[in-house]
Image (tube, rainbow, N blue to C red; front, side, top):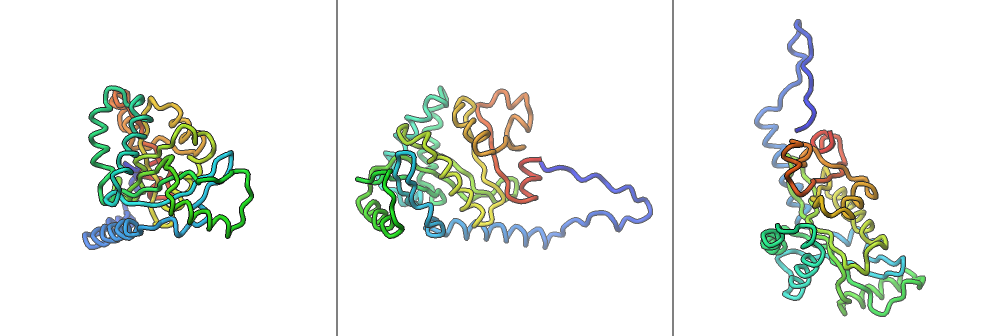
Length: 260
């Protein structure tokens, strides 16, 4: 779906035509991309690479982050995820929700599903100025005592249009921690994780009816409606669909496919 290259009008020398990759080159590229996704998915502790993102402490809010995998979720965590999803998304999905809910129950426990869990820090005042050692100590206490969960990000490393991407399946927060900069903070972390693992883009799906989410991604984070979104593939079909696919590309090849 990328932009098409116009043929060179050179009747005297066909050697100037762009050389097509042979089968060996295609297979080598495919293997390299598969290996890239496997390596990214194998990292079970992505937060270790970004210690400054373990803690969000501003705007009257103090939370700590923890990573997880879909096939390692506890029963209480599964129940929490579905409860928050229903509370936040039943409205935007409308009559589609019963079918969507079943699909999301399957998606959330897949081995390739990756999570960033947000825990509210127990007994922490967001007005405190903490030293690095105090933050580490508080983080340890928080994760050991499992401060109450107030949100999560669910994502996967996968292929879209033969491009390795980080696909955000969910970004869900409790109402009382919204509008404090936490969502932007989490998406900045997601973009860093994507870049570290050499993904070509971050991709996500947003319900058109979710006007706050559309504004958040398009205007605050500068994502764009992707060329693979129904409204750009075929406007007539797009009008019938309830969602848009948004993206932020990190290299020229991904830009050509997703943003051209």
